[in-house]
Image (cartoon, rainbow, N blue to C red; front, side, top):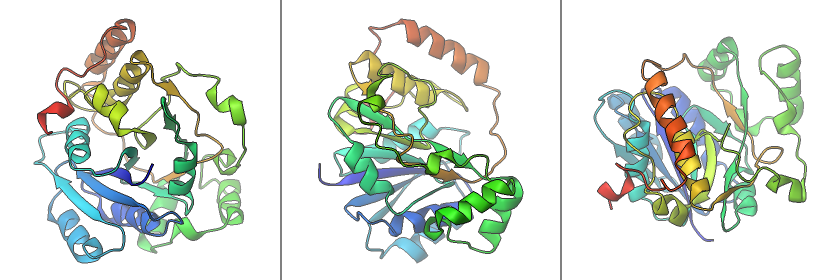
Length: 271
């Protein structure tokens, strides 16, 4: 594997995106590109990328479409279509990563597997403090986070524990649950083989689970990224979940359709 493409999904939160991109620019492994998958943000996001990241050492591309409601799967497909790497890492634009994030994902990558990492959630008040004071979370020590956990500002500390695990990373090869695109890696060829995200999933909910299920149906197995590659997830209000039931019903139908592999409306529209 050479170049990695990091797909960072964002919508109208440039302060969080800035924190996320800053953490990516401070990686130990610098052989990657960033594609900001912008689900219809206003001009502030475009200005942030143009003014602060257009000349950065890590290529940062802005992939944008108009705001027509929650269409994360669509903009991620568009971003992948413009990517140059042969390995993909999906990340939310309100997630901050540690300096070894790319390095560890590269180490965990294996043919025939996708790799979901896990996350630590910040409280609303702590998130506001981090963003207003521009605290570089990516450069803080473990002791810093242990103290914040003890004072109730972070929901858990176990993701910071680094364990080799070895073959234990492969014990749930068919598990699709809790594999989310706030921290999910896979080979681009595997993503292309299932035609990417299915854009029939409109509104919030389960487009990432559907992708993982179709990967599994196509013979791609899960390799666990927990205790290796966590992210810090900033607090935000829940998205509009009016499409939840419809999306969940479609997901349950897909789960039992083992021959259903390729998205009906997916990546092939853009390549």
